[in-house]
Amino acid sequence: MSGRHFKPPPVGDQTLGAILRYNPRDSFCHIVTQTYRGPRVTGDIAISIDGACTNNGNPNARASMGVFFGPNSRYNYNRLLTNGPLTNQRAEIWAAIIALQHVKQLKMSGLLDARRVVLIADSEYLVKAMTFRVYHWRDNGWIGSYGRRVVNWSDFEALDDLIEELRVEYDVDVKFWLVDRSWNNAADREAKKALRFGQGLHPFFAALIAERDS
Image (tube, rainbow, N blue to C red; front, side, top):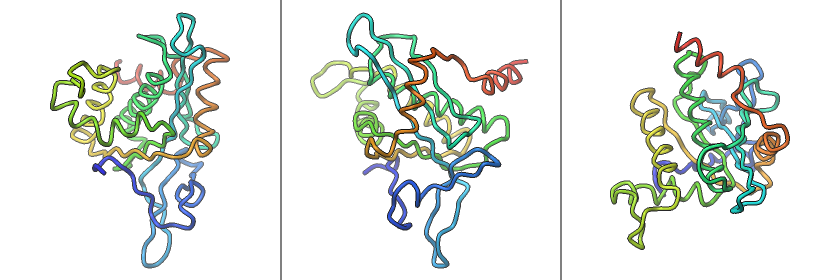
């Protein structure tokens, strides 16, 4: 596996409940690691992401993204996908992009000190692409094994560029953790909220962007 693949530490039964510890003071889920003295809560954080889509592949499709920082976190976020083809796969990619855009904003504002961010997803399509296939695609000009452009290549390129920007400019190492769908219900609910209510830019992040650009 590549350096972007997250290997759960040997803490308890290695479930989300054992490995993640939510801190209501900073609104982040922190990763627990195992030391010789026992489990220790680190400054690293995990963010659950998911995409949702109704009528996938049809002209009347609607797609959305959900980003879950933790129970009642002020950073939890959902929005509709409005650009390009509206598919479940693109929603999954853009959920990762939006989560990392928020990480960037939080780093710029001084609200996040983490040096490692783990994206939790149930999409094998997304995780395998970003932990394994992306290196060949990038080196080959985003041309796949059949000599054609990789499907959703521009979205994958945007995500890959953002991961590299966080690594180089903000000293943040991004990892991906592929989990069973039953472990990702919170992010799934966030994504489906946008399908129901059509929410847009989170006011907290809108304020951060406005302050940055002022």
